[in-house]
Image (cartoon, rainbow, N blue to C red; front, side, top):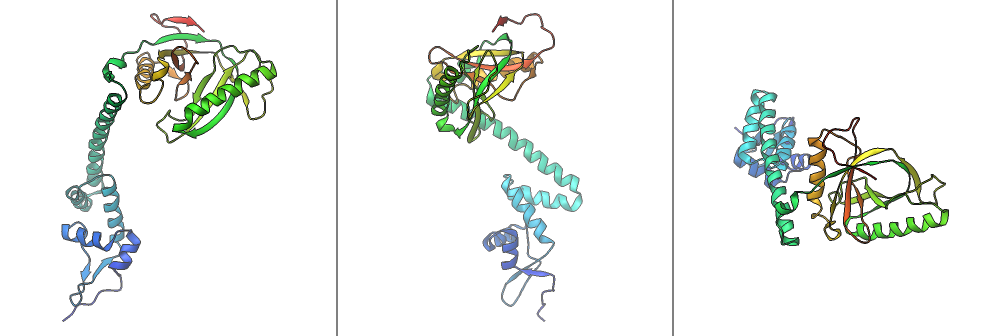
Amino acid sequence: MTLRRGPALIPIGTFSSVTHLTQKTLRFYAEQGILSPAWVDPENGYRYYRTDQITQARRIQMLREIGMSLSEIDSVNNACRESAEAASHLVHRHFISRQAQFQSECETYRTLMFGLLDDKAPDAQRAREVFVREASGGPVLAIHAECENHAMRKTITHAHHQLSEAAKTIGAVMRGPIFVRHMTKPFLDPRQRFQVCLPIEVACAPPEGMRVWHDRPHREAWSTIDAKDAEYPRFIPVIESLVDWLVSHNRIFLGFSTRVVLGKAGPAEFIWPFMDPEDEEGDQIERA
């Protein structure tokens, strides 16, 4: 006697469309024992699935996307029959393992990039002296800019020129060098948003396309790097040095990214403003 499929069963074609898994993939999963059809028509071999298997198929797809092997997925499926906690423990353990692997890959990538771009080993560039100084604060004339990574240098140079010309036009007196204030992670995000800023003595009505904001008094950790090395990934050691210093001295970060002074001549400055309610012994204080 031939068994007939029940009304709650879904043919493999429909199941494939709903789960976004190809029929070839579904047959492969069945062979591996991680997602077997609920019923196979003995007359034509056509496969049918239950509606509750849609959730299981989507879970398998997500587990594959985070890099789980078929044997690991099978373990998660078996754990799901015991408890959600047991299954989540396996997924979390896999995530921790992948995270450690990713960090290792990042370090390998970093070493490789330095090797390609420079003869110096990265370890020789890591130790950067960090200084501390006080900044009085004051008005800042700024241009907001947005561009792809490859166009950053050109965009910043153009904004430098615009700010210098604007300052002359409105009679603003500079009180410090032009700097770049990043709104995104420098070179790590595919598209960059940043401000090119000119500290001025007195607030004024900004020219069209610019704005004036007030930089409050603060202290700042800073370090220098050769202008030729102020490109990704060569500037990574100086960023790491600033972050390490701020964390080890329990300082409060102002903003999530650095300010960068790219002068026409001489070294570039990487600056990270911070708050510190009281000076601690041992800090090197320099008046800005």
